Image (cartoon, rainbow, N blue to C red; front, side, top):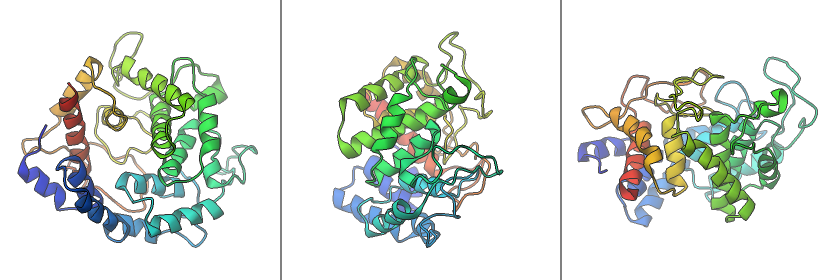
Length: 325
């Protein structure tokens, strides 16, 4: 699917983090042009503002993780989405500070003790919840950090149905969560892209991938019923949001499949039709929802407005689907 020229111009009239991905994914621009634009993420716009907020202790807001969206983990996730070049001097400096100084505290934000097992762990050693560890491993692998310990743990926590669930440890659930599974799948994919494709990692990722595909990305396996709202968070998987953080939605699932190089089949057709149905008369996609919480830097135009991020993401998913049919 090709975007109308006016939509491309609108996307290019934006932050360098969007511009370089438009050049690469929608315009097939020369590599030199793409890389020149990508380099600006570290020095201009949202990327530069996020980097400038890092504390001297290597963290953002003094936390490895918090209930908002401005902690170290969340900022690194966003920098990955922006496409900050891992080889840039700015990225190397920022990630070095995180690696060397940021530790997990063991206390939740409300003062609840969350366990001795991971208190004092270095940031890229992670903690105990696979949804959080998946997010840490995804950004760590992308930025060239050693996340082997996290990957090994995630592989050991895969459930019989192919996915993962943060509640498996505490409540003994044997049913996987879409939310946790997408976080782990993205982590395993980033690990493969950075470190090659170890057989055990690829096999686990493909089993997790089938968990999503067997459910057509948003249906119950048992009944085929559409899952309108997530049981745990109440989030509507059909509404387009960005950033997604730990939440699953249909566009996020499709974006993972695209990046993984999956050949689309009839199991994604309904999800694709859902994304197509949300395009407005100007050829753009809206920000339908934004997860409540404080962000370090705002990246959106506003809920209900046409969203450059969602438009970029939708267009490249539709292009992937069209090319693979």
